[in-house]
Length: 380
Image 1: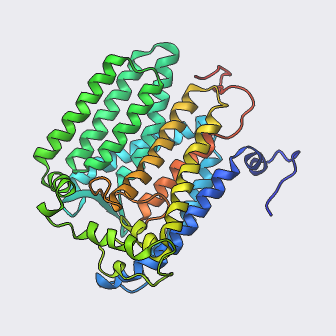
Image 2: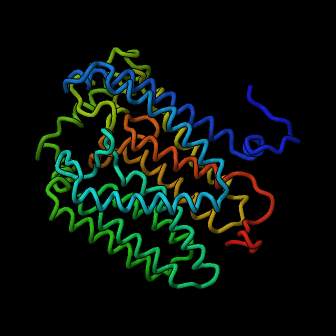
Image 3: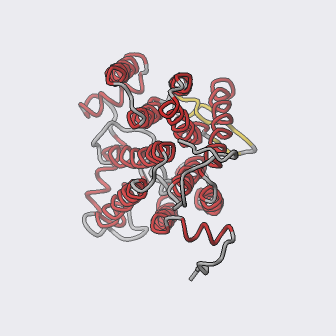
């Protein structure tokens, strides 16, 4: 078992005694479950679209150690280091978002991916965690020293990101970014008048998207009235849960994955329900809930406003993404192409989630005393 003496002052030893090892173990378990489900679900998808049987399995096994390295490396950062890394990644992510509008690869009517060195990269996945930390820094500055320019910068960044996402178009990602940003703004002391304004703006964006984006209207219409359009994916998904029952049909014994599009990514929860039953589904829900609640419990002992807002935003983002994926799969909300954190196949999603959870582990590490800058000044 990995352990270090309390008197060991090396970087890794200090990390080991200050990081939340329970959250680290829960994330490792999610990664393990994700690897098993990729092996169970992806061969059928690969063969159906003309790839070799283990095409997706091989790629995911390459992504997994890279994600683990990103997770550990990011969790070693100090809160100030986490802020700087997020600023750098946000700058690259914004350039990537802009580039998708010009040279992006279009899939299912949306240009969300860039081809880089033979790989498909989705810049919005990396923008999500980076923006949560940068927005937290700006909100903390505004709250601590009354710098209205910081609030203006946070609002301007949000507007730019949401605008670029809607141009792709990616309404679901825009909603997640807005929801997380709204929670952070509220924690920073958002005036009630702005709460009303932002709520009205959110409703307006949703209504406008319904009337201007055909795929959004189609998904909402099919959710409200399944007979109004093609409901093949959600029908197969619900069939998988019915087939699985409590204990599932057994690993590799599911049948729905052979006809369910995106069984290895957006609908991997359905494969888990069919082959491993409600038992594994409930265990996954418990793991996601544990990570989020454990993170908030750690924040209860921190007196830095920046750490509170940043980590809270990242935890809400993580939990909300899981809820959207599982809710879509169970037909509780309109379908949305969003991965199940650490479980679904996908390189961009996996690496970005590892970065985000690494930031959570970094920000919730035990620290002696308040945060200080290089001049010794206490940071908000």
